[in-house]
Amino acid sequence: MVASHWAAASAQTPSRRRGAVLERAILEAALDQLGTVGWNGLTMEGVAAGAQTGKAAVYRRWPSKEDLVADALRSGLPDFDEVPDLGSVREDLLELCRRARDAMFSRPGFALRSVIHECDNMQAERFHAVIIKGVVEPTLAMIREVVNRGMERGEVRPDAANGYVFDAIPAMMMYRSKICASEWPDRELEELIDQLMVPLLRPGGP
Image (tube, rainbow, N blue to C red):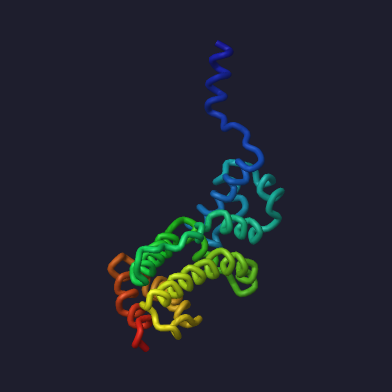
């Protein structure tokens, strides 16, 4: 009877987590908080509750909310290391847009947008490097590779490889997502590529 009671109690009590397992749970809880209550609503206490740990365990690893959120964003951002090669600039750019759309509306994507939209200027500085290194630079590098590959195939005019062209896709996607509340269905992504990018890139274009 005693053994049976002990087994039942143990089954109801979460096992004590340590090290990387606990840290992962805390980072996941921070992403959840950012996606549900946003930057302004996120608290260290709420994160601790979500991770089913004590507040002291959170503060021991991350002395401030900013430190915790920066690490949570880094841990949740997708890998931008595989450039599509589907045989044409149109198809490659369309695939990049689909990946960007899926990332924007993923849990880490919602978390990142919460930080960007809600932080004041001083707080935003803390996350500038995370956003630039984790999102902006890898995205631009992939667009640049696709455009340069198109130039080699003769699909893209030589003077199209410039910063304004590379910025066009991420700028348009962020603008229409934030201002127009677009969730970028496939049809709109195709229109972005066919009505803006293809005419912009093709030989004899603008």
